[in-house]
Length: 556
Image 1 (cartoon, one colour):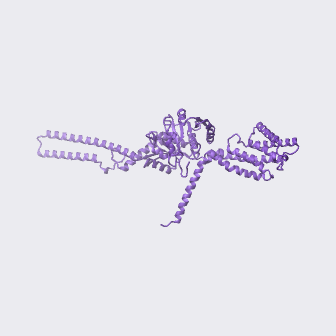
Image 2 (tube, helix red, strand yellow):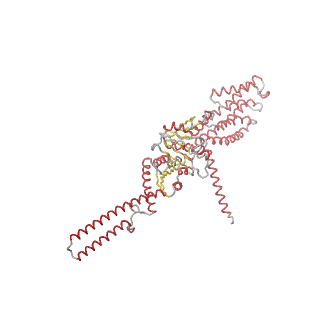
Image 3 (cartoon, one colour):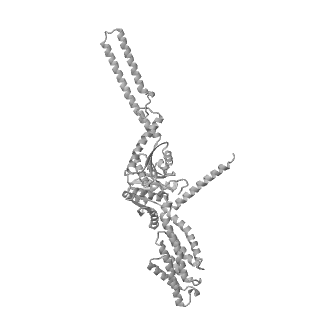
């Protein structure tokens, strides 16, 4: 078999594009973690800024080295904690400059006290102590405390050794710090604070919602999906029902039952008519005993004809002459397989149209109706692709106490999925609790869904659980980073408790609890400790389990 170079090249290019999409998507999910974003910014921006400062400071001979330590450490402090105490551009510039001025003052006092420059005999201990003392007092009084200020205060004591003017050093610090501060301010205001708009896909997508209407809570699930879609201007809802073998069998049984009833009724009426004819014939015969033979023969012929007519009518009822072309939807007609499928689809469409009309009227979001054939999971995924839906909202189903195979298949799919367990039968969710275990794209998606459901008048609480008090401060920082990406006000809660116990004690105060599907956990981990949503079956509130789909190339 000869190898076709063009086909081989096309295959290689296709694989390369898939690999590229996978890596890009994986990187996008990785950078949605605020901590990763901050570290990457430090890694890229601090060296670039130091290079820029070097270019600017080369104009001042032999001062470059003295500028690097305070600027490098100060720049790292800015970018590593953009919302921290020291992440203030004005404080950064003022602190470094005040430190330089305090060090200059200590240097001048040293010259006055000893009569010789400090650089000639080395740095005097008194000068170093005085520089630190003045810097601490001045930055405290002016509320411009910053660790790097002490570096500029001490390094200026070496300026004489560098054969440069202290004034030039202070001016160089002011200029270099201003460049760094302006760059940081632009990065924080134009990118970091808007990172949800640029990086988090959930804030832009998940507005075309597919809702498989299944089970008793199918209509409530449809309302849930509609409220998610209504939060976006381009939102729409697609209601889906699947006509599978079980549905067709149920319709067939109803048709057969109705047909049997018609047969029994018609046969009964025919028998009654035949009995009446026989009684009439006997009466006529008894009343005409003196009739002639010819008349009796005519009567016999009439009776015989009556018997033939009865038989013909009875046969028509049983056999249902197909020449009459009855509609397959008429009660009592034994339809074929295609007719059964059409009838099942018509019944499903009628039911979905009722739900769709209610959604259009009460929620005001466009709503389409689709009736598909085949297995439920294949039909659901196929419909989602064909209708361009990027979110599936399905009822939370269980089989023998475990998540049903249908929902598990959706969780393993490539499309974002929300499984809704309705306990209270409500159609509005104004108080929403979001339980997160770690930052990432799933956490951002859950917060976004919570804000859509709560609306402007609702409230959203963000919680996480810790094992010890040592974990409290990092947990608070993680929740703060997540809350910053929200468009509205979000309450944060850190509880030292098991997640099951916390939800059991607090879930009643909320209309809805949103939790992740733990997709990133291994099968072994799930076996040892089942996902949280499977361990909170008893809480008396609605629960939504969010699974970020494994879109081509996506991965945790």
